Length: 279
Image (cartoon, rainbow, N blue to C red; front, side, top):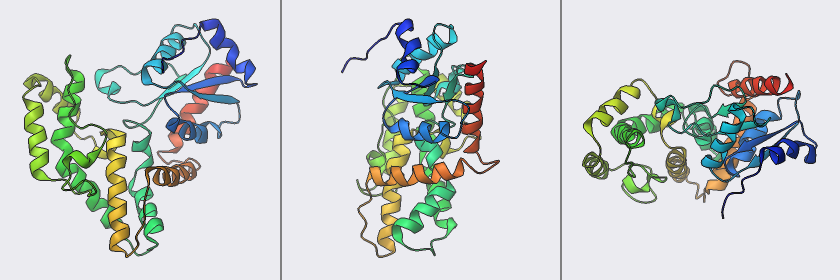
């Protein structure tokens, strides 16, 4: 479906139609609850959150916010933008801390809580989660480097994709296959300049896999990992994307109220956007 492009005048009166102070434009419907949970904690401003269907549509809004053409807030995935120095400096433009919303939903704490809840086993230890994250780090660092190199290259190619199954031992497994990963690395290196690979490697120094890798790719593997935990605990659980997303959103929303938590920083940025609108 083609994206609807509204005039600046139309965008500036939409909040009146919704009886809100401002419209928050996001990418897709999966982003609605994420940003809703953040802005509901900013009572200083009434917002209406509207998905536009793509990052390019949100980027158009960002351009108009920066130029002063419209009074609105934009909230989008950060993707790899920070590695190009392409993040907006406007307080009315908010970004996810990691690649996308999934990267903020998945943490040691949220995965441990999810594992214990879905497996109905309070004895699952944090070390199990940390071992999974270490497996991601050991298996995917080179592929992530090449994925970023592809983004930095004028002629990008598909390296990681949106689902981890391409690189795991089986489609339903969360365990990465060293041969498949090596094949993916070799194939990508054929098409990417060594200079871009070196640049990406330098940019990713000290950066965590779970915060930086494509969010859908990460969540697909997290779903398979939790399913295996449930099976090991003797629970035959059909863990869907929607049920896992819903659980993680609930966990995330609780963390938004914890002073000093990394999740709480989202509320503080939203408050900054609200202050900018009210000024």
